[in-house]
Length: 221
Image (cartoon, rainbow, N blue to C red; front, side, top):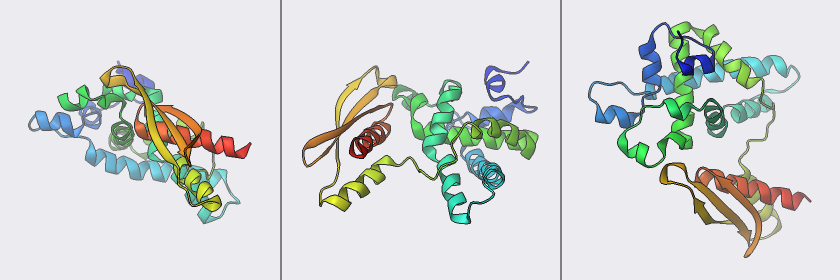
């Protein structure tokens, strides 16, 4: 019988130990001797994911030049996109984390989730080969827009503002709600003291990106 996570990703492991390693954060390994953590699998998964995505967009965008393909690929495999994918899978629920990470909301932390997503892909590749990894990755890739927009709205906003003035956007946390392990941050972005956007997120970084996106929409009106 496949585990719950195996059912979610659509792949059943021959070697369950590989999946366990992919779900083990270094903080957990640090508290338990002789236990491998997922950083090596993360390294492998990053390359496998990149190859699968490159092959897919090469076929889907037959008239795009190399530079355009590179930007589309970078967008698809960005840390933010991997974090969102991991959230869709509820991957944080299956991670093995040390007590420190657990007490500070590690199951929702974007860096931990995006890295674990790559580790899981690496584990599928090791256990079942390239085609098995491809079958896990492709359903997700096919739901993504093939766009050059990096989603780095903070950089886009700063570039927009600096073209028109000497000011730079300023970000401020205006509200934090929820328990320690599941906080929601609300951030305002201002230019020359005037608020142009408000954003929310599970981390300060995500809330700032959301606020910057809101500000960009304001300036486009």
